Length: 143
Ligand code: HEM
Image (tube, rainbow, N blue to C red; front, top):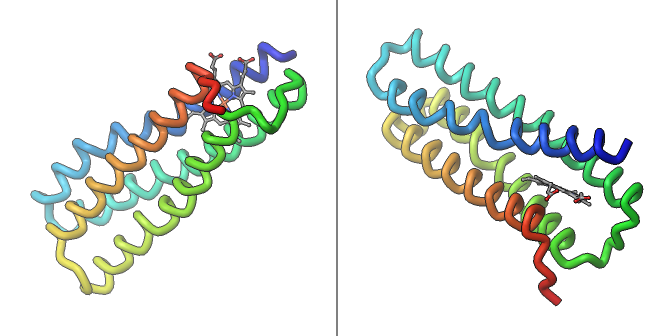
């Protein structure tokens, strides 16, 4: 059973990071296309973020089950650090994507600014996920 939970946990980690890499070629194309294609690209962008959000929920639930089933204490430093980074990335994810797409749709920012902001957010989010991945895999004793 424990192995199955670890498998689910790792699978949801893959689904939390993977979709973001699809977004780079999409961001490049967004600059070139007409309004109609742009709208469909924005929809793909939002769908990818939705997958990441659902996978993130599975990641947290399976993580909690692992803590319980594996008798890991909640005071474990690499777990605390992962949770700290995760909470900040959730706050960040909520602010980074949807509000900027809305600003663009309301014509408050132009397309170049939108693409720039989205690209920066995608990189930052990948970086945060890689930091969490490192804490989980290396399990460093920080204190
Ligand atoms: C609430 C947050 C989380 C909790 C409580 C949690 C808990 C755990 C625990 C206890 C293990 C150890 C399983 C074992 O080795 O027996 C583990 C493994 C793992 N976690 Fe998490 N996790 C969380 C979030 C994350 C996140 C955000 C990621 C990825 C970005 C992640 C990726 C992994 C991976 C890849 C492993 C397997 C590492 C290995 O076996 O060497 N986890 N997690």
